[in-house]
Length: 228
Image 1 (tube, rainbow, N blue to C red):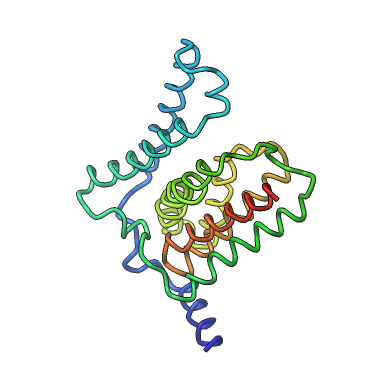
Image 2: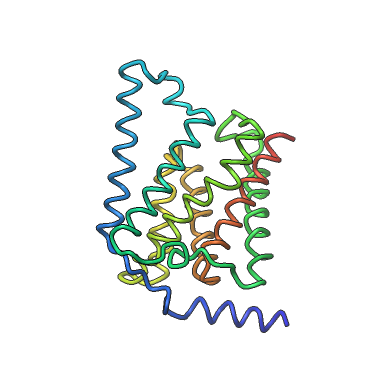
């Protein structure tokens, strides 16, 4: 049974995108990026006018983070829905993965986070421990949903159509790392490594849901180590 599962995974990894080939284009990626840039500029302007405290802009609280993530999720949905009048969630890969990946994805995310936490013990990349409620909302649900929707659901398939799957996974992982603003080489490696793992899960499972499960498990284990 294990060998059959492995063969199925390898078969998925080698096959093309098939019915999941994206209908969106690079212009849509640009539109979403424009929304992201505009939102950042608005926050900067609000901070400049002292409407938004500079400390809140630099270190957003739960309400601001929640607002920004919801707006970006809505923007991505509307860009695709209004331009193409087609279904959005399923083409982005939000389908239930094969049973094997319901187990594999969280395990891979959890073990990766445990390895990172143990290797970087005493080398915390963010000394602040977020509030538990905020983490549960942002770290386990909204954060993974938004990031996996864009990077693995939207960006990876369109890059794969032009560059091939392997190059798309690597490039998406690099952009994923860049998005998180790593401050040093260690953080670059961590974000790129986890981004590559999420991309591999997305490709082999054909499911963004599986990548999000790995992402959420990774965040959960990291916060458990941070609070221990």
